[in-house]
Length: 530
Ligand code: XUL
Image 1 (cartoon, rainbow, N blue to C red):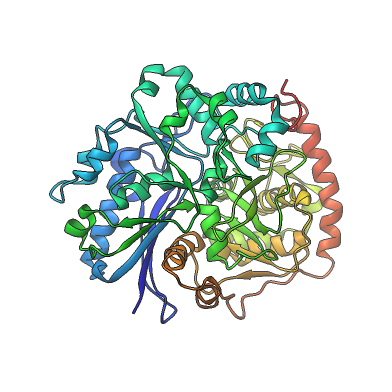
Image 2 (image 1 turned 90 degrees about the vertical axis):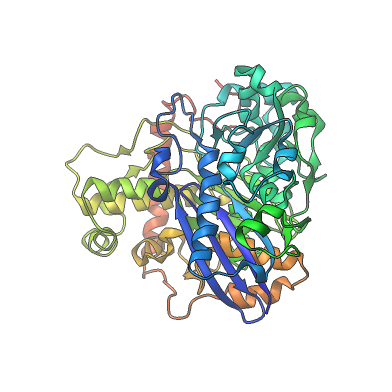
């Protein structure tokens, strides 16, 4: 028996799976939802909703409490952690955690008699962690770009232009606004490397998959870029952990997990990665050829890349592929929260949202369109102050459901040309991927069949597969066991739909351009900022 543990610290929850890699089975699957299980933090969707000027932060103490709660609950229902041979994980990308000097000593001294939260409550030099939804660092992005020679230079070095949610601009903002807090910071971790450090009992490396989402890593060299680091904040080089390949082992699991949760002292820990890079592995898409759409709090479209290629408009990104090489990623902030907003507006359940609404509305919605930007959008970078409709009619539920879905996926199609890939199939993952109606709209817009996998939860599964791979398991073999498409669940495009959507895409992009030309961020990030 060979058991590996994978965790995923996402925006709204912390989840865990245990895979039996010899048998090809999932033997445990558990989750803690931050809003529902830890209501005392008053962060119902996993982050503080009172942020001003685009600030979106989460409470890192909530993540610590979630980890003890999750492992404790798993033990209560009979999970035996002593059989786990390796643990790794996946984290929401870009979010950063700021720790005082002496963090390593605190980790080394953790007692199993007290909780992680109680023992580390005083370890943070910044009380909150900015997360990927934060859009408050436009000034810092411009400053970093100016210092190194412009947006195109940042993009050539790091794989992305300077982006508001990326870690470097977030660090710069902290450095400018709280110099004392910054000076007291000994190490800055990503969500992924913070969790990995807890398990290893020491500060561990940031992997190439997640490190590329910081505007600090030189993509070609796989290490910190001196110019970007210097342009971001004084003395930053000394506060960053190492960068390392995604299969790096970090030593045995910390004593805390052995004594408190019953792990074997021989259990290996492996660096964590970002949720999208882990999902690439979990979807069996580590080799170029498969295009994945993930429907989560954010919707993302990603694929392994034969060679790095950057988005000429500046919205897409290149990250490290945990299996080696590169992956492309495009992120849309208005994913599940936008779908939920429409569902709530008309008090629908998911079945009414999906089947009835789509059955009652025609493909193309009779020309009625929506820019589903409830939150400031990332792709394209616009703040429309809420959703925008093509006319001010009294909207029926079914028209609105179709409008939000068509708006999301036409926007996705319109911003993915630069990838230069013509997928034969799209592989769908994430919470909403089981919804056949949503899958049908995607199949119709992209004009190709959509597949879902047998085993859901690709970020968590991918994290566990990475743990096994780091211990020597063959990735292809793991994919054949855990990344199989579910038979009988393929959704094919409907006759004539693709042609209709090719036409709709043109008018959607014109509508988008008309609306966004009036917003301050509606320009391509590769152009000079206004
Ligand atoms: C990717 C991104 C999001 C987060 C969500 O660039 O910002 O997909 O990783 O967890």
